[in-house]
Amino acid sequence: MTKPFLVLQLRPETEASDDEFEAFLRKGQIAPDRVERIRLDQRRLPEGLDLGRFSAVIVGGGPGCVSDAPEDKDPIEARIEADILSLMPQITALDVPFLGCCYGIGILGKHLGADVSKVSYGEPVGTAACEVTNDGKDDPVMNGIPTAFDAFVGHKEAVQTLPDGCTHLVRSKTCPFQMLRYRENVYATQFHPEADASGFETRIKIYKNRGYFPPETAGELIEMCRAADVFAPEMILRNFVRRYS
Image 1 (cartoon, one colour):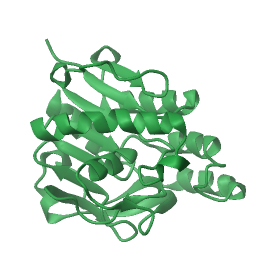
Image 2: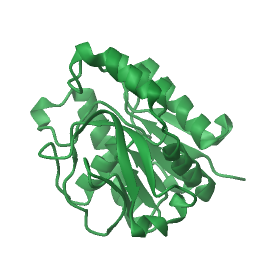
Image 3: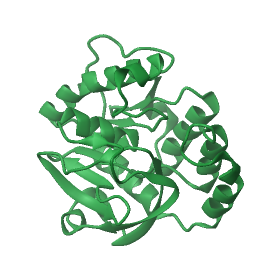
Image 4: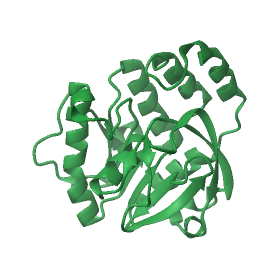
């Protein structure tokens, strides 16, 4: 019997969480009965969770920042971060198939001891012009992906240096570490592989007062996202799902 995917979500806003989850299913072409979904804002990870029961782990994005000082973190966001970090030793030691999206690259970087901060490489809500590296061209998850593509981004913190043991797969001028792989099966993206214009419009409306952009520019950002030609990131998500199905 085919094992399900484990989708871990961080967003405390139900509309944003549901929209993201549906995007993972639709863009990844995952049947609903092949997914176990856990909203970490609503419940803790089961004690002694056996990741061997799953084809892969997918972690969505969220409004938290791993680089924030503990006293500045919302208690729920701090608990979510602790829960995901508790899985990373098992994931990296056993090379469990993993895809961390946006927030996930910060989690992977922090676990590996890399510098994750707001010093450089934060990107405003919009698109980033991405380029596949030479190593990326040889990666199976990047099969069929154009060497240059646009992706939806929006983040305050970023990985400042390549974490030890990681392979650099995708870069951009605004943020050099857009996609990484640790060992053979642990992936993380700074961009959102599940996002499209409609999904980003939903997030812009929900997070317009969370410091990602001046609230009065929300309308302009929505129009920019609607006009963007973003198609390759969902191919990466789909490749990941197919590889580990």
